Length: 272
Image 1 (cartoon, rainbow, N blue to C red):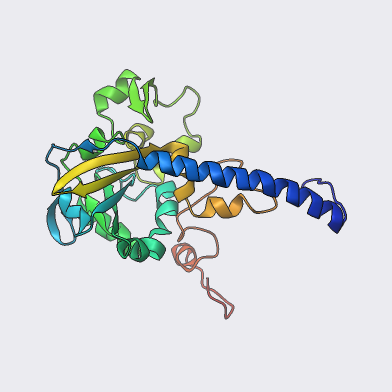
Image 2: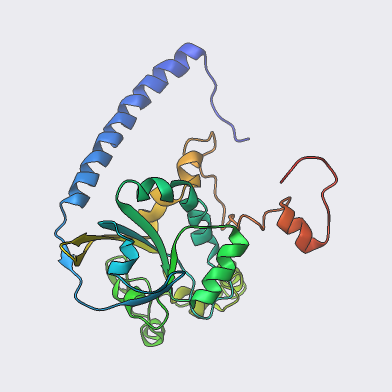
């Protein structure tokens, strides 16, 4: 543990009440931001997009599954990936828990990736997920909504992402073999292939049969969707990050899948 000041219960309560006022102010600010998101102008989507789903081919309107609102998680799983992105996988671990609640509140949640549907199905089975996941393979959908970049864009060192232009995502000199390379290797690709995808989420509404784009966010805008971070932000040491520490949930030491992969067996009576 780090060195940290200690105090009496009375001192703690006084500090906690002071912090409570700041937390309430942040909550009110969050409510205001939510209102402003809802007030953004809707942009009609006239382009035709085609997706492959477990139910067959679908249009963007078809992904709504009979509801008026659609939330898309842009899951990093490119056509050349052999497995899903670990951070996206950590975020998606929470989807099954609330997708049913959203569905009963007129909202469909669907992940979308550029990999062919067969790859998505296999990975979904490995992770034990059941939420809707559509393939946009061969479609411009991911590129048009800012989460996929062409080879030419990437090699030019001038990529547009998160409402910024001219970003250079190429591997910095001296980073070969570092964390970024290991992250790419975890999906079975090199860095260039891996980072031509990006994470994000987009919201759509279906109004009188017409699809409108209402909102998109990327990078730290996804923190609120990453279920473990709100918990860590309330833990004694916070996020306490020194690098890319997360793994797919079946790859942590001590899980049944990790033990099976290493050829070891559990010796106790407890479950992973």
